[in-house]
Image (tube, rainbow, N blue to C red; front, top):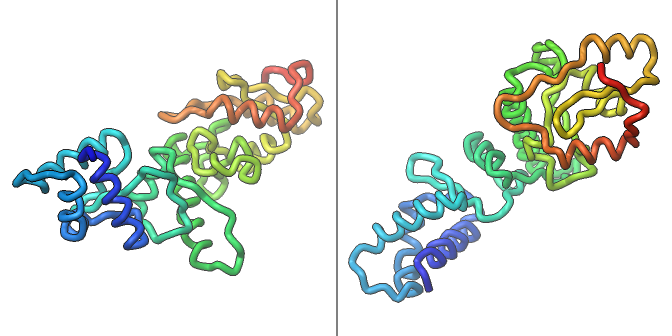
Length: 241
């Protein structure tokens, strides 16, 4: 068996055995070194160096990430936020690689709820950073009035709950207007507003709605299309602000 597969399988065994996706390198080698040598049919004198080289290759494949202090995060499969207590850095890395998942938790499962909410909090932090701490549609910057608003709704796209391409920083007003379909974003991030809005809403939409691009992660066109489909978007019913 190739060393890559040997090391990856050993990392998975270690993770299952300890019930965590965080792997301590020293403990990992102590527990898995002999088994890896047998599986790789290696007679070399430097298995630790070989494992180090392979782990670097796995990092380049984005299957593991280095957390510091000799610890790694195993990212070979999606990571369910509610399954274990993870530091912010580990959650952020899972978000970065699109591997974090947020499940549906029963209200009486307090531990899982706390873990899931921590994941949600990190999504909010990363989203507001992506939009420089401001609503993407207006100049509201007060933290208490900003939300990490999902484009494809939480219940409609489970796999995309933690995908930053599916989250936009919006103030409470624009979040509510977007949810109800009073404005939509086209695939090129152009804003169109509902022509039949009341006079008051028309003022808000036409004078205070202009999309401000994020610094890094753009809204995903597939999610924007899901939103437009959900609100029954028809081009003739919308206009540019």
